[in-house]
Image 1 (cartoon, rainbow, N blue to C red):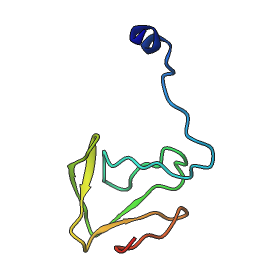
Image 2 (image 1 turned 60 degrees about the vertical axis):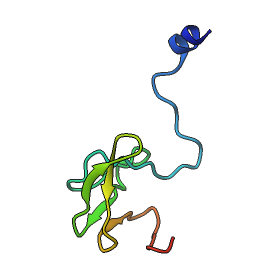
Image 3 (image 1 turned 45 degrees about the horizontal axis):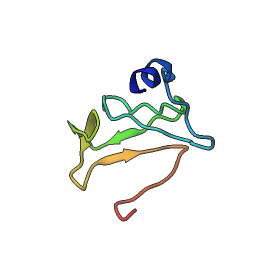
Length: 79
């Protein structure tokens, strides 16, 4: 049962319709990859530091630093 499913599952799960962004925080360098649309990466502001994430890498935020997501949406501390 599980072995059969595992052999038949797709290599990658397709993104749901209408999804505009899916960011990976594995590397924070010059931006964070948007897997849905590589032309709209997230951009670090004031040097967020790499930190362990729930799954893979994450970003340690101080409250003064963060990310912008041009072309995707505007988010503030209170969101």
